[in-house]
Length: 278
Image 1 (cartoon, rainbow, N blue to C red):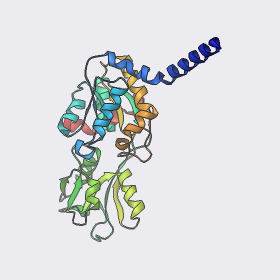
Image 2 (cartoon, one colour; image 1 turned 120 degrees about the vertical axis):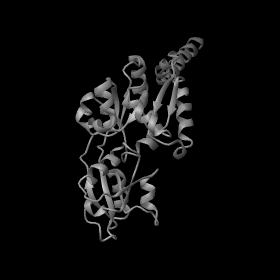
Image 3 (tube, helix red, strand yellow; image 1 turned 90 degrees about the horizontal axis):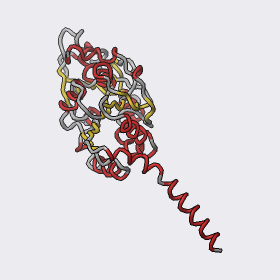
Image 4 (cartoon, rainbow, N blue to C red; image 1 turned 180 degrees about the horizontal axis):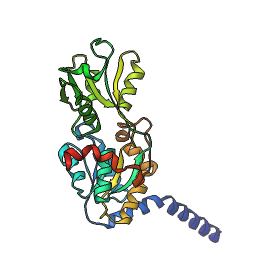
């Protein structure tokens, strides 16, 4: 009976050890004492609990040296990628391509679905049929140099009389405001489709950009390979993707992270930034 009990005890311990494998493997990164910043393209005010939850879970799984950074200071987020500063960034495709091709950043994981932007307005405004009709009107978009902002700037270049570009915290919220000053909006196709599904007869597209690979996690080349491997494994795990889902859903429906390659973010993606960042 004693021998049988010992065998059962050994088996139970083996099972418990096996169940804890993921925590042990993720925890390897905690041996590196250097603080690593993980930049997410969100404002902390929009996700008051998410940052605390993410940092708590990262610490729980051994990532005690990771600090979540938001884009409350949008300039710092941009400049970090522009100048190749250390960190891991969830970056839009043109920023990612810049960092990859100029500073050898490593692409880790990308959102599986493609990304595109549209300039849209309501059918109710019968004076708007094309981009040129926006001359003298207010068009709302997000921060420079996001792709929605750049799409709008490129589209308005051909207009003799320019529209007024209004930078807003949330284009999506402005689209829902009855008294919005915006005659049109530059917004992701993902957001446009969401409105089109619920209000199919209300919205029309004036222009749409080409599709590109979506937002991607990129890592500074001086981060150790072991740390990069552990971060990639954690972020792509079911746990990591579940924690990040509120952020990923900003850029695609049913968003999932899949492996990314350097070839996914060619130099052509970042050409649009040359006139601003060179």
